[in-house]
Image (cartoon, rainbow, N blue to C red; front, side, top):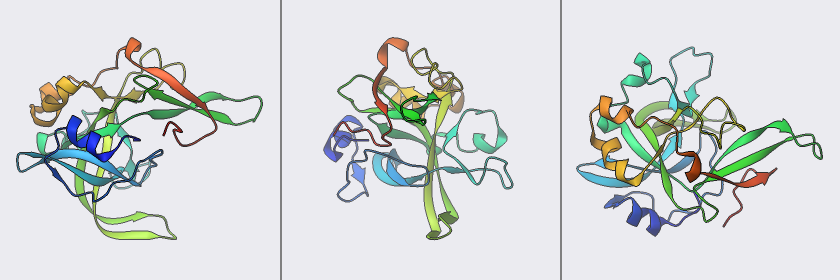
Length: 213
């Protein structure tokens, strides 16, 4: 998420914020903080949340999920109401290439964006307040957290050759209000692949950061 704070305010019509002087985010990793927009007292608030929603106790997938596909699951449906939905500001996202690079023996990281200028857009997210321990064993963070994750769907023809299982749910600007406020049934109709001709591969290599700063 490499655009500036003022650009997020303008595009997402933010009228309330609690992020201080927000840095750029050339990489965002699971269990780390990132900017998120959600409704608060009939305003759009920009705040920081930790990436990863809590999984069911004892889940084979670990303590948290960074993305959610099965919105029919009783575990996830509790957070599909308007008060638990959010917009996740994004300028690019990445997946590992399916095969190792012959020159390095490691898989490249493939970055996707709407175009090579990295315009700001949004994933369809959900969020919750949560109490417990996050972080690493060496540096645990105990207490109250705000957690988020985003929805995924079938990949389009740009993402599919790189990651055939899924792609993030990208929302058109005209659908942001619907995602934040519509009924659950209407909002879930937005869980669909992004058009093939409106997404590009903009970077490919070993870097775990999008270098377009």
